[in-house]
Amino acid sequence: MRTTSRRRSVARAASIVLALFAGSCSPPPAAHPEPAPDGGELSTVTIPGTASGFRARAAKVYLPPAYGREAERPLPVLFLLAGVPGSTDDWFDHGRVREELDAFAARHGGRAPVVVAPDDTGVDNEDLLCMDSPLGNVDQYLSQDVPAWVDEHLRVDPDSRTWAVGGFSYGGTCAYELAVRHPARFPTFLDFSGEKQPMHDTVQNAVDEVFHGDSAAYARQDPLAILRKTRFPHSAGTIAVGEDDEPYTAEQRAVYEACRNAGMNVRWLPLPGGHDWDVWTAAFAQSLDWLTARMGLAVQP
Image (cartoon, rainbow, N blue to C red; front, side):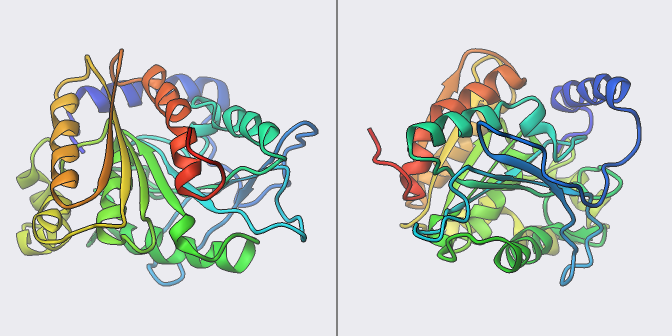
């Protein structure tokens, strides 16, 4: 991600405002579910980096009203990723995800995706490119440790063909990267206002600052390079961006074209606005019917 970009400025300003209200303490490693008499439950959990060694902050888990009903098929999982700097609370505090899923569940007998919002920036809350690198094994944490924790601790559909990953800004780039590198694990993705490649203003800066100059290590994980040589007939994604959000509008168009050329079933969703929650909230709401149809929860209209 570009450390001098407008995206970092917007996200950092939001982080400062949140800190004024929430204080500077890190979230607790675990907490009891928040009461939700009319909807799902939201909990804070610890997901260790067992295989990756990644030092992650606490995650959030949303369980819809129908979660755990013995007579019904287990629910699919949606992994939601935040920007940088950011928090695993962001989708719930600002993105209205809980409200949207509670409303969806109310229309579908209590059924909605289970949501897991893991940490994608680590204890130092920094841009790690969502890659395995000398700074931390982010990809391994998100693609191995987090799903393993879900399998062990949650009663969800074990068939990852019903799973999805999504994110905004840095998290959008990360969701797209995971979908490209691990299509069997994440066959459906939401990329809101991400970049065409993980970078720090430029790819070369990312190679120098994160990989200590090892361009081959970067190239092996570069989603655009993978898309040029691999077909993805079973993958699908929604790529959304604000129409006034350059350079990300152009970069998201490049992601859309690269995914489409690689055989993915991708949707292009330009929305009024810039690099902000108005766009990301609208993008999630407008993607929910398509997303849940992909996840086997609803008939696509």
